[in-house]
Image (cartoon, rainbow, N blue to C red):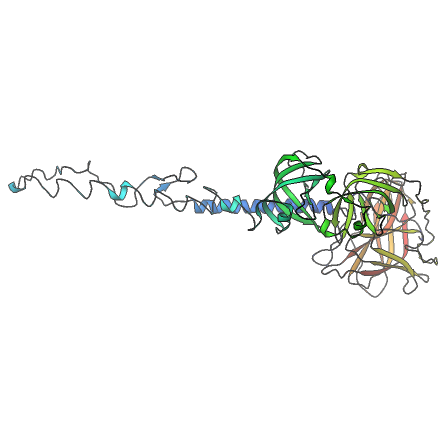
Length: 523
């Protein structure tokens, strides 16, 4: 991750074994490379848009639900407020001033001397007290709006808790992990900050063997906490990104005490480190005297003292040579696609001692074996290198385009895997570079595309990586894939490579494609 000119290692700080992207998609196939982190941000913004839609819908519901009869006007949230009467819906108030203690129209009844006092009208008992209006029973307590459960008045139940039932309240990491992905109204309480990176931080509370990542693609919503802070924080969005569970929106962070992050760390030097898995996701990791097995760009692998290898991801890394022995001061156990990895989000600053005395000599690459004719059982074949821990690349004579052999590429992960033509080919800024390869893709489970990476004169600094928009198509014949790009400013060399992807749904766990006759042409 050699025939005419060169192709190379396609790892940039944007394309990672575990950062933001991975192969696979919901329809056809979804390649993931440097745009993955952008996808993460887009997903975050989509979630925010969806919530804004919910809020708009709530507002419409409020307008309908909080409208009283034409006889009343609501002056405030209705918690116990009696509506102001404008016009009574019942019996109208008497038009005579009164009450009618004296019926002036008929007192005295001069036509009937016996009726000196009109007893029927002396007191108008029907109107002395307007029982229909003395208390407007229909409106004195507005039962529709006292608690406006559909709207936003007394208590907007749809907005105060705009989530799936069961994902509201306060509690621990174990409780949050039980929530479905989506909006939540959940306060993590008394969790300890174990690791802080540039775009988020990790917490642990002992309620489960796992920790939790709080990741903020759009920027920090509050000042960064510090390692060992014991905090409470309100979480409003819970998501997954390439398998990694994470909180993507939060507020109201409060420091409530002091914790001990180191006491919860998992040690990579212990026997159990070789069986770290999903059950330990987002936990703090430390380790000493760990051997770098391979490393290119930002990704590689380390060998554990008690056996086994694990994927290593170092954001914004300087190159580590294979054979280097390193101490890890702090890292997080994260997931990317089907792989978990030791993830140093602060780059080389998360490393302690780095001993390069045991590094193997740099490999010299040329273009002589770009047709895979050199008889050699190595993986990968001479003049090529691999990026990705799940790729097997070997010479085979079972299939070939030119000569008598090709490279058989088999991978067993949904994560990006690259086969790089190792030779650095000189380029001139502004000129065109073309990378091509012959491909036999008869496996519906996998695809590849040709790509290139541009380097500065030091052959270590990657300026950019470019990827063809065309992918291999399933078929029984060899097809040449070709891609051209203009050399950017400050570029002195280019390497060509092929990037391999799974095809979903569903990913069956393995795929095989044959490649032959690499070529890089720099004008």
